[in-house]
Image 1 (spheres, rainbow, N blue to C red):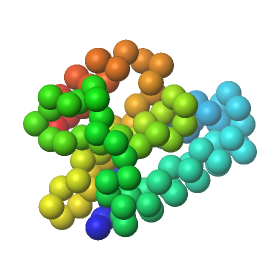
Image 2: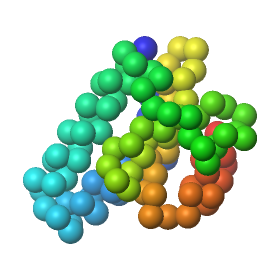
Image 3: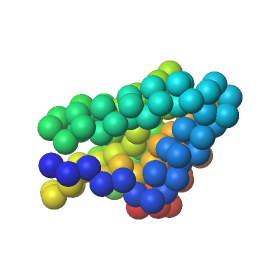
Image 4: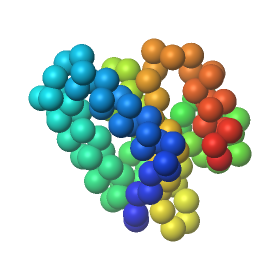
Length: 106
């Protein structure tokens, strides 16, 4: 199954990677990007890898999340033809606002 990232999710991911690069250096950024790529690859063969996202349990789609680090999650759902990554969360933010953001983009 193919994994498709929304433009919004990609933007959030790149903002995070840039932040890591600026504050922790290129090596930390590269390790972070590699981890996200590994998760992306795993999702292709294991679409239920993530857990049901509790902050989106009342959403019309069955959103799931995969923990990338202690503070980052990939938010996605499994469609009929592909897996769509809809957001990339920084869990230091208010999770209810993050959930509302996902709902406004879907």
